[in-house]
Length: 385
Image (cartoon, rainbow, N blue to C red; front, side, top):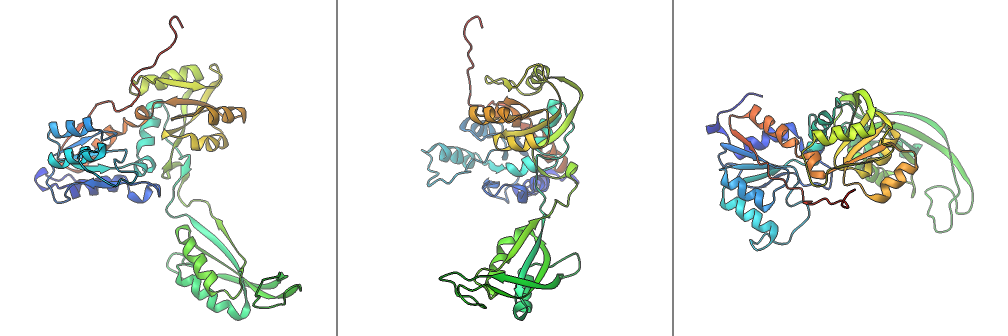
């Protein structure tokens, strides 16, 4: 990407650079990413970066003369009814607007992007980031099969094709079909298109198979049900393997291998040495002397991927915000060792990556706000322990 002069740069330009690196379509459905406040036409000569937009961070952004603040955790992820200046989030918004600072968030789209938050975490703990724990391929394809009476075949095919099914490359309305026998017995309350309530029915039906992008699944089901003559049409949908190379696919988490095996105790210390220091520190669950080599990482809260880590055969899983019962059950089920880091520590290093993305795309000043926004401030152990 060629650099632009600062005189030409606007909030919209910086947004485009960031959304190219961290495409919004990679964000989880529940997420809220993108420009939170600010005028897209406003000029930008300095961009600041932080993990969270706390009040202290907002004030620091104004103090250093930033025109735009890029964060990871969206300020308005959950709905609010007011941004009045006497509410916590409202005070942040008013501070930024009065100071002329636009606010932009790249959250789960930055987690899944390549390179993204998880690549930075993987590199820091000592592995080359490979495949995601949970791949996210926007081109996932469904393979469909449906059963239709012969006299309704063309109408039902037309309906699903109209919904976007059956496209392969430069070809449209692609399908394969053959004839077979369908059987059912209508129950009480049924209003069968063919057959009689309470009596088994066997008749000629067509089996039709086609493919469609998975994001059209709900639309195709609606069209199929509307056009099909049966009250309960028979169909099946199978999600095909991702089309992207798994080793380079976008998605949440990363898997890789250490150059040399080491004990869990040694690797836990390596993780602690690599990440920003916090009061929380780094803790691990598992046999301290267990040898580990194959590693999974997931930035931020990652206990929802414990089953995935076990299924993928890793030796140790590095993430944050782990809870007692999920970890206990995971280990009892034979899962890999786990390392629990502070949420802030696992993601803050991304700010360096994001600043490099912007610096490579525009001639603007970039500054990382190094305020620690990890909420935990004290960690205590018994005297003499």
